[in-house]
Length: 146
Image (tube, rainbow, N blue to C red; front, side, top):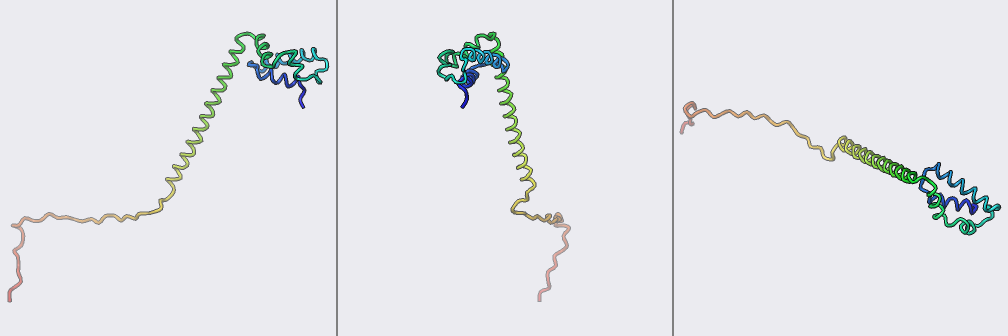
């Protein structure tokens, strides 16, 4: 079971919107204050700590007031940029994977022979000669009558 003051520090950390270095600095100072206030902090309950220092959310807000005003804004901008970058990289990965799958299926479809193969033969060449004029035709020969 975690010590009550460590649980309190973790809850305060969740409410802090600042860089990790600033979080560490603020939480170390708060931990020292808790240990100074409660000499036997290992046995102090979470309710006792909250009674002395207030709810973790309010304590986080008080600690953030110690920081310069632009620190929280800069941290929020950095987090937003990081989230946008991660979203873009994730979207790029999805597009590349989908493109690879589509390309693979397209190549697979081109290389797979169809189920029915139609054999074709070259067409026969038919030579068509024009009819000669009637004047050039040989005289008609009829078989003799008997």
